[in-house]
Each structure stands twice: as C-alpha cells, then as structure tokens.
Length: 212
Image 1 (cartoon, rainbow, N blue to C red):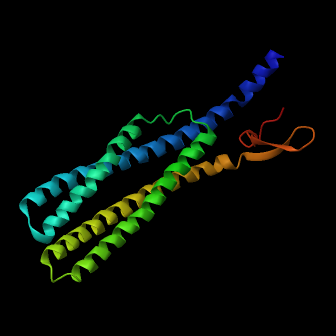
Image 2 (image 1 turned 135 degrees about the vertical axis):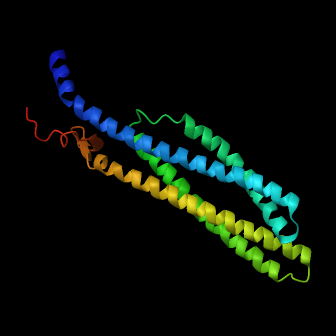
Image 3 (image 1 turned 90 degrees about the vertical axis):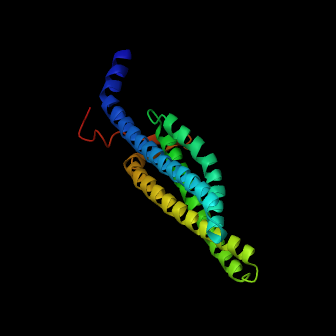
C-alpha cells in the first residue's frame, strides 16, 4: 500500500512542483512591484521634504505656503513609506498556497484602488482651496496661503494618482496569471448524501496525456 501511494505521489509531483513554481513566480513579481513602488514613493517623499524645507526658508508668500504644505504632506507620507519599505524588503513570497496568493493579490489591488479614489479628493480639495483663495483677494495673507496650499494638494494628489494607477495596473496584470490556476478549480459534491461541497484543485489538465 505504501508503495502504491509513493508511486502515485511520484506521478503527480512534477505537476505539484510546476503549480507551486508558477505561484511562487506570481508572488515574487507581486513583491517586486511592491518593493519598486515603495522605493519610488520613498524617493518622492524624501525629495519633497528636502526641497520643501529649503523652499520654506528661502521664499515668501504663495510659493512659501506651497512648499510648506509639501512638507506637511510628505511628513505623513514618510510615516507610510518607512514601514511600507521595511515590509516590502522583508516579504517572503515563496511557498504561498493558491488561496493565500489570491488573498494577497486582491489585497494589494484593493489598496491601490482605494488610494486612487482618495487621490481624487486631494486634487478636488486643492482646486477648492484655490477657488476660495481667489474669493479672498481682499486679504493677501489668506489668499496666498490658500493658493499655495491648493497648488500643493493638486501636485501631490496628481503624483499619488499616477503612482497608484501604475501600481494597480502592474498588479492587475500580474494577477491575470492566476487565470490558469482558477481553471483548475472545481466544486464537487462532498459525502454520500451530496449535501456538502468540496473545493478541488484539478491536476489532470497538466497530465491529460498520461493514462493509468
């Protein structure tokens, strides 16, 4: 009996190894996109903090407020970038199951999709600030602040929208590689009564030319 089981396992092991290797590649690509994205996001954040700080110290009026809001914006970004970069570096994509792979893929896509929606609110808020600023032209101090802050919100929101769109597109393209695995998933009646249902990962498609 043990010998038969060993032969069966040996027969299907190339298929199991191939399926796991495919999942590992998908997860490795997902982690690579995430890491590259966090490096780009961190670079943008640090550059804005450096340029913004210099701008606050060397300019005045509307432009000074523009740099000021860039600093505020990217102090918050820094709090997101540091843990995000650390997690991306520490990520171990190998050996994840199909279920875990799907879950992680959907999670990262949802994250960038939700962020993209928030980016539109930043841009909208920026235009709203500019409109309010123009309506306060009688008070130069308030006008400069609102116009500067508005320009900052528009610029930061536009970058984040582009960033999130690119990341979402890359992860969506990578998740399409799961289609070949979904085709092997089927629902089967479970138990003699047929009341239960079990999820089956079909390996026969890989070895359809083999016969016992």
